Image (cartoon, rainbow, N blue to C red; front, side):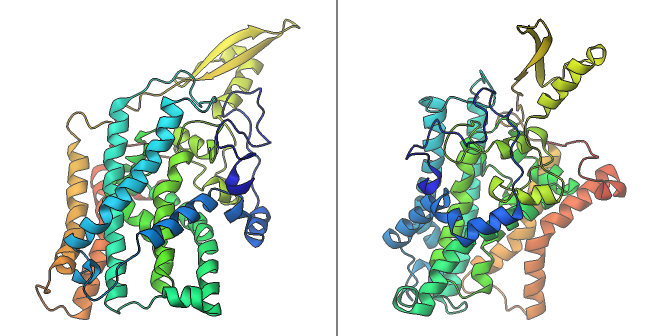
Length: 439
């Protein structure tokens, strides 16, 4: 249906391939194909028949109701890091992002508008919600920093952009505007898979991405609950606005997509608009299903596709070889008897504690050390960019060095810490051959 709804409904809806007789997460997901993805793009189905329709409308409303001020006296002209700009734009992004996340959280966990949770009888965890909201808020602040840089480049004339008069007053401009809107979700599909796969490289997983994976049983606020370093790389999805002549709207739409699209897909439920059992499997098992479901053909191609709960397959093995049947810590097996008196196994997926998804207690020395070290990598750039007038006159090589340290320093620090603690061999370990260090 329109915007991915079913007869206009957003809740208690299921894709046709889901077996309603099976518990949530038990029906194998059909492997998506590249040709299917291309077909969806060709007929713009990925816009009008998906959640992208809702997010594009939200972005258009934001763009026209709260337009960028790029005038010579605007806050954007104060510098690439401007307190005035943050005061102007941060409240807007906080309300939109946290409000959208709260809507899904309250309707699912408060009002019970869905019926098929992946974990039956899950216990509500306030500490985890506080943890997720805190790190999500940090991510929103970092996003406004990205937006500030672009607004400064546009306002100061350093970066050409497609003006509104061109976007809506000329044929060439209109084509660029609407084609850009259609291509942003497609670019996000590819960017997310490869950026996400990189974050599972051992040093980056241990120091950075493990914070996001503190949630094995996800909820809407966990979507952008990330380490600040992960936010830095997650937001590189906006690079097309740097390399192509684009409208400021394209940056806003890309940013909105980055901030709100993870909410419903991290819901923890199967039967609502944009429910994503595919990504739920990724959080449960850590490895596999790196793409979003719309581009899961990438997981099929690279052999990282997980169609349903692994415990289902394990239970089937247990019934064939009962002598070796053992319960796992994440699964309960209960013997039932059917009408033919033959045994079958009922599988109940149990909730994990997610004990590290909390703000209680003192963080580990390793976590604090990496956060401080990676912050120092960015601090020099912030000092130079945020001080007006410039504190020193930099040569081009010096400016490039500062930018390199800010962009790649956190990766190098993560590699150095991993090599120091676990040896150089740890840098080359395959993704699945390592302990999961969830700091």
